[in-house]
Length: 464
Length: 96
Image (cartoon, rainbow over all chains, first blue to last red; front, side, top):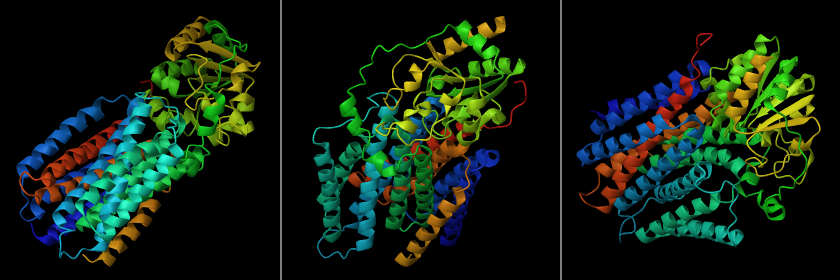
């Protein structure tokens, strides 16, 4: 294929990616946008086999692609929507790993470090950057995956002497990176690789559960930047454009998410949750009195209300109770009751996650209200029904300056006339802190699996 | 291509990346992140290029092939999982 044709194809692919991101910004065009991105990526990949002169090992390469396909496709098809955030984290991590490896291999080819070879310092710097950031993204994403998949605790993990070890490793990685740029050698490159892999782990371990989504988004942006840098190393424009697009949009998205949670990014990354953990020691679940009600009590409370606001949380998704909740909403609407869903920006595990889950259960968009829109309505609501949510309705975020979630915007559920919590247990939420609202006079609790509880309440409503 | 041209492309891409998603609705934050994630799977072409230049049986070739597998997982898995999320946003018939 002539050089010009392949250049034009690269350009078209880049345009395809830009339009894909643009499409993903509006519900109407989102799906087509994604398909366009996939098409562009496929074309670009196929074209590379024709545009690069003497590409060796094509059989092995195609076999490797088939293998990657055989792993990626079924994993993505089978994952449950509730587990999707960790899947995205994992896909992002392997992308970062791939970018790091690409630069390592290119370095091995370049003969940099051999006597008498003149090196391009900028290219070496880009190589080092890719290896460093790509590796951090790789191991960091694996840790976030393990946290979300509950293969390890979602609480911040504080390693002894962590405040000393982490900066030391970071300095070590940066130091070897600088030395590598000054005098390139393979051993230094592998030192950077090894230290960065460790750094990724150390970097994510102290992050608290509720902040993990922000970290996924940030690591996503990281991978984008490392792909852009690898594009510089290879002199490939498409990689630069695609990587930078993701890096820039990912950074903006991370900022949007952090704002939605009312947490400065630095606080997220440097473990603001740490202090509290030590003093609280697990919260010592005191035997304070709470008011619990039967499903019938709750059915009556709901059935004779005028306005009900439903607050779905991650617990709803885990119990796969979205459709049951919709059934309840339909029943209430049929009784002439005004029903809205209040969606916290980070309900579920990431911004927009709850919208995806409720869309899966065919809840009409019009009933989904975002936080700013619904908050003024809580004082008018007779009942706020909280299903499997906790941290996003915890008034401590407003009042208690010492609470780790202080400053996070919350749904003003406590302003409603009555509050009903459907909860599995008294266990605190993802952020690991107590919710005073549970002990309030106006609060009724119904313990149990969200789906079972909702089914009972629905039965109670039908009997009214 | 000379460094300055590459730098130009880099800087302009930053602005495009920010501009193009600045009006995204919160509903789509998660699919957007996932879609962007799939796009950086294009590092696959980088992996193919470096593997194709390596010596038979060298460490470079092995690392390159691993990169090809990882990048393919990123790209394929990323687009598929994004599509699954967006599938749910399609307009549906009432009473379904």
